[in-house]
Image 1 (tube, one colour):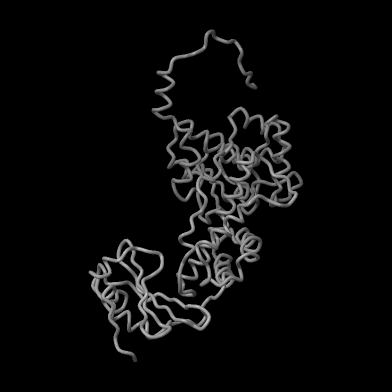
Image 2 (tube, rainbow, N blue to C red):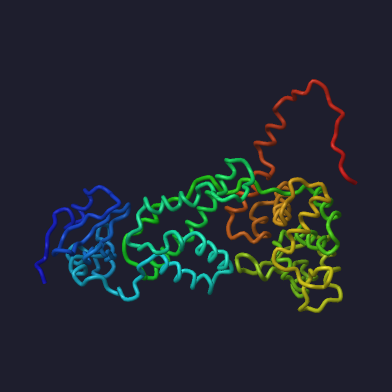
Length: 407
């Protein structure tokens, strides 16, 4: 073994404290082709190794530097200890992932076992990641190359498919889609890193998503529009519409409900197949309880609550055409998706001053952020009350024109 090296910049915590923070580690060659690296962070630094393989550098993490905590020789290392560990070379290299496709394959294996959204994720991987950067070596990824790929995802379409909305709205949608695809890429690479399948630089962590591109509009119906929509719906679909308005449940949650999910004693309905995978119980109003009580009358515990007119179950996307027809018949333009019934449930509660935590719990949100984003602006608040009370009227005369409401 070569003699122990010395480096006045890296030898001690005092010397390392004088170094400026930078993306690339500070390297010190140990022997030709082998170097020890130090990356300075906000709260201490980390050691890494770098080895020339003949056509590229192989890099791997070593451990934490003893900048703040004294070295223990295992997780926190002094310069001397890190030097000795680097000389051992990259351990556990068997099974190391080379390409982005390797990481994606490993990630999707985990997704298919744990996540309900695996089919959607697999489509994004197959459509947007594998054909473009899937064959690229992970060690060759750079911040610039990932940003270039992200920007190309958000570029205007070149096919003849007609785009709807203003140019600004079209751009927002493209960037929002690019953000979702970028999230999948980063998640797959982070999983490979976390599970020890890849060791090296992590430039994807420095690539940020496009800002302020999440959907800003979450359309909902007024109470009168909701009643009008019900009346304009086909008989079997009308029950689904009413069920969504009474519970705030998604289409898939409603169509999976069975007779046993309604508890007349507690006045609740159970959601077994939720988007988050967690079971939740939705509290019903007196009207809602009576509605579900009528629906389950005479049904066996294992029978579905909502069925089509022919007695068959509602399937995937079966709600789209009936919803379009109902909106047309109810003179609701532009037509809304079935999801708007869920946002109607949350919006009407918010306008009545129901706390966001309660709305979020009823809708099954994982945290308060989504609830705030969608419904906080509808809550009664001091600013709105003060403006309505203090701002003078500018009408020169009182108009007698009023909107006629349906009875």
